[in-house]
Image: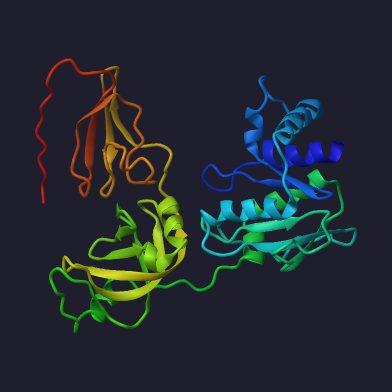
Length: 355
C-alpha cells in the first residue's frame, strides 16, 4: 500500500508537466492485470483529494472497480495514446537502482519537444515488456519507488533523460530560399499538382495552417508544406493535433507547385515539430474594460474560433468574450475587438492598413 501510494503521488499528483498540459502516466502491473493512473484520478473522488494514503488508495480502488485489463492490453492502450502525439516508437528503459550509482547520466541536455519519442521507464520490472522488449537500461540511486520516480522526472525536466535516451539527430536547415532554387526549372500548371521526383529536407516556421479534410497546409510565408494523410499515414493526425502557429516544422518531401501554382513541399515524412517560444496560454491584451476587450491578433491566427476550427490547435485566439466585433483578416496582424456582453446595437468600424 505504501509503495503504490507513494508512486502515485510522486508520478501524478505533485509532478510538473514537461510540456503543455501533459502529465506522467503510471502503469501499475500486478500478476496478470494492470491499470493506468494519471491526474484524472483527482476527479474520481467526491471530496477534494489530498495526497494522503487513504484517499489516494480509495480513489485507486474506485478506478480499479470499474475494470482492469491485462498488461498486454494496458501497454497497447498506452501505445495508442502516445501514438496520437509522437512520430517515433517509444524507448523502453529498464531502471536499475544501484548502491554504486552516485552520479547522474552524462551531463548533456536537450529541450523536450511535444513530438519527441516517449520514454517508457520500467521500475521493479526486470523482464522485457510484451511486444516492446527492452531497449536499454539506466542506473539510479537506491531508494523508494517514489524517490526513483522523482529523480527520473527531475532528470527529464532538466533535459538529461531526453539527451541520453532520445538524442535528436541533425535537423534540416534548407528553407524557402533553397526551395526556390529547386523549382527554377519546374513550370507550374494551373489546376494540377506538379512535383520533382527527388526528396529534399525542409525547415520552416509556420505562420498559418489550413486543413481541408485529409489535407493540412502549413503556411510558411512564400511556400507551404502539404501534409496529406494518404502520404503520411498516422503521422498526419499527429500534425493535426500538435502543430501550432509559430512552431518550426522539420520534414522531408518533394518540391513542387500545387494546383494554384504556389510553391509547395509535398511532405513525405515529418521529422520533428519544434514548439514556439512565444506564449501560448495567454493572449496580449491591448485594452479591456467592462464592455470591450482588445487583443493583439498575430498573422495566421483567426480572431474567433468557430466549430470548424475548434479542434485545430493554434489557429484561433483563446478569448473569454461574448462576441467578435472587428478584426483583421486571418493573414494580417492587428487589434481584434470583442464585446464582453451581448451587444444591443449595431457596431461599425473602419480598419486602415499601411503597406
